[in-house]
Length: 374
Image (tube, rainbow, N blue to C red; front, side, top):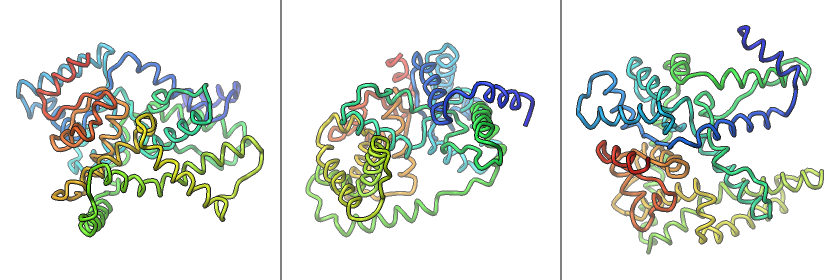
């Protein structure tokens, strides 16, 4: 721990202020406010590799050089930033060559301004909490776009020092100072620290793809339309999300009554079933698809693969779907693969139109998208 970190601890001790959770939230909102004038441009792995190779001189095509220059100009002039998500982070470690991986990380540091979206699961939770509170009549909610941004060091979620052995006030000061320190860590530094120790996710996703393909083949004859397929996928997703909604309602009730609520037993199971049924019906409304956008985007893409009976899930699809949920839900421009662009812009899905995100699948088209959205 350096002198700056020690000074941070002393500062927080002298001015204890708010809880750790509120302190983190305030820092996130400050970051979001700083980003307001900037266009959010989300690049998938293909485009990061293209631009990295341009920087290295390995690519010299006019369009590719122009795209890098345009992004650098927009970022440098305060008009854009290129955030990443946890899927970008995971795919970065698929680059087994240390030199190219670190070069990609340096470029991400430059163009992202050190900014990432919070993880997929956290976005689902925040969207659900905001939806439930707004349905309950709350008018003072923080807009979701002010809570969706974080720094690259917390791209996989937040971890704070705990059970340090210090008294409560000192531990809180230590936690805040640790957060402040991590807030400044670059992706390049994280990559150097992690090295080759990042566990691969390929086997898990290959297994998941194989299981889903087997189930889809077994039930393919039951599918009659995309909307019906979407409904089937949604109900499956709600098996995981409905307990989350019930837990949020339980926490609201606990704060209001001061009494704890059991998360098992008949009463709890009834609450989960009620939320499952309510959400399944609610998703017929456009405003719910807008509010719970991460779930809607992910469900739509799973349904699109299932409805296209000639298509099979591949392991990398799950990263692609998370890229799409991050980009379409909270960014202005999405540069991605041609196949994913076709899926998200298809007329029966039209996720780009719903969320106002321009999608491009090649370099020339990406340049046009950036200029159009300027």
